[in-house]
Image (cartoon, rainbow, N blue to C red; front, side, top):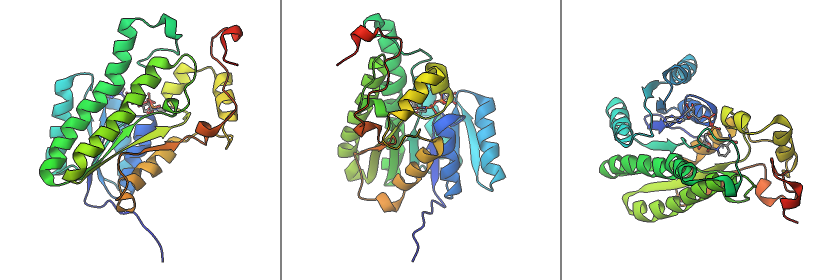
Length: 271
Ligand SMILES: NC(=O)c1ccc[n+]([C@@H]2O[C@H](COP(=O)([O-])OP(=O)(O)OC[C@H]3O[C@@H](n4cnc5c(N)ncnc54)[C@H](O)[C@@H]3O)[C@@H](O)[C@H]2O)c1
């Protein structure tokens, strides 16, 4: 006996899938048979993802939209549904440190906080809202919100990002409760340290290596591992799972070894 996941005939939307984790999620959804709406603010990279999927015999289309614009979110979901005829799977992957480096709590002003909350929590909530409206109408679906391992084991210098992502965990619970009766499952995935542009920009190489060395598995999370996890969560194998935060963090959550503090005076470190 073998177990297979087949998303043939389904339509998936993956936000921010022109690069990094989102690209791998899009490619894995396509490999599992789904038609994939590839969203990104960058047209060139979105088209590259579509080409990667087409090269493997999959079906995808690029939808260029900057999701910092509320109206663009509603338009994206409407366009994806029109293209695919339905929307079965939605992965809300856009989120970031807003192009900002890790920063001390005491150095974050209101604009910094608003930017982080906007680009993580609010953007995710508005995407999920638009997706849920389509899924309610068609009788069900699966939503996956991308959170972060930072929400379970916070590091110094990341408080606004971690708090905004932690709010996504709670949003996922609330959505699961409200949308469950509509046959919509909602889960969150939490990547550990994953080598993407976002991370390369944020951390010096030696800091990155120290974070990885502090995990029980002594490894980083690969973008494709979030792809595999998302394909599983979207499948019937996970049909009784909703409202969960699933970690793919090499066990960082359990580690007793703290990663080094970045740019923080040693005297400020916790004992
Ligand atoms: N890389 C990690 O270690 C890590 C760890 C935990 C959580 N995450 C989360 O995973 C998600 C993906 O991260 P990543 O490392 O792949 O990032 P990335 O920066 O490599 O890729 C993000 C993609 O989203 C696109 N994008 C950014 N803003 C957008 C917008 N407003 N509208 C549309 N597209 C937009 C970018 O153009 C890019 O293609 C994020 O939510 C991030 O917070 C990443």
